[in-house]
Image 1 (tube, rainbow, N blue to C red):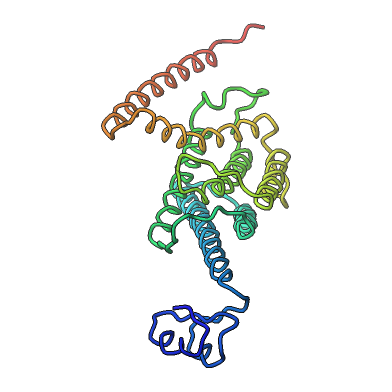
Image 2: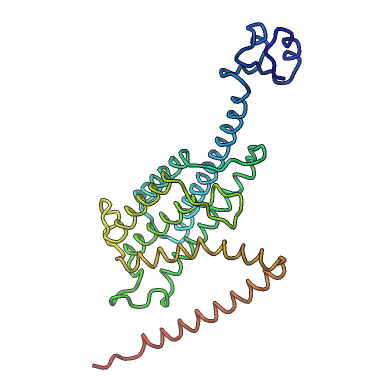
Length: 298
């Protein structure tokens, strides 16, 4: 109920939410739940827009924070199970980068929804957990592929791509840092098939943090936490891997929509694709293994 006259006092008092405009009498304002400070009803529209904007910002902030936390905690548990030690200082650096990005999302530009927003806590947390689980899987696959297979690390400048623990640690630091921050591209999109271009604050934060992470991963340092870097070529391959990781869900989603695909069709395609990729990777491994075992003529 919106009122301003003396006679509106009783109606405002009996309504669920009583609103008094700026010109209302003091007697009417005393019974109101909300008192507008500007003339007219424009403050109501502004308040609705601001509340929806705040809801969208907090939704993106929560999804990113949950996703980042799940990723960091999950990867540390997996690395402990695999007896690989990621320096606590490196984890602190990644957490600091994540905090800077999450703080920047509070200044992000958002698109207001056309319908009223509700704070669906379970859905928001579930979205963060799913995103975090996906990037956990990408990091785990990267680590195992970099440390256990030869076809991924075939002879760059006479050394394997991830030969020593120091190089593996630097590569893992860069991969985790990139994929952890890149989730912010998806948090403000209601459609999983779309990447929403970030605002200038988030974009500058992402570029700055990843330039620092890439520089340290390439050349090492960070107070001896990275005594050995991976080099520019390997860092480029890590960026390419993360790009493929982020584009894969989008391609699957667009293919699903164009083909009107059912769950059975998608499962069959995934099985066939997995079989073909395993066969091709195994063939490549055999070829490279044979080449490595051939004697070198002098």
